[in-house]
Image (cartoon, rainbow, N blue to C red; front, side):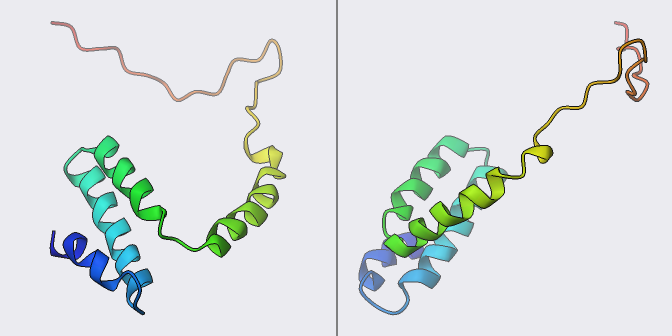
Length: 95
């Protein structure tokens, strides 16, 4: 909490980006450990407003390189007539 309260005081100083990194880690921890993903997502978006424009420009340059790798997102279907290779599933427990 102290980190979040102290952020406006370091906004124009050299500690802005380390504090933003710590806030991101704190809110990711809140999302995972406390199970509050919507709150954490909203706070991460609110904190991301303070990131510089060059950060978003670098994301824009990085995105086309990752989306060109279309083979990563393809789903592989088995050839017709061949059974799908799926690990055996156990039957649900009876009551």
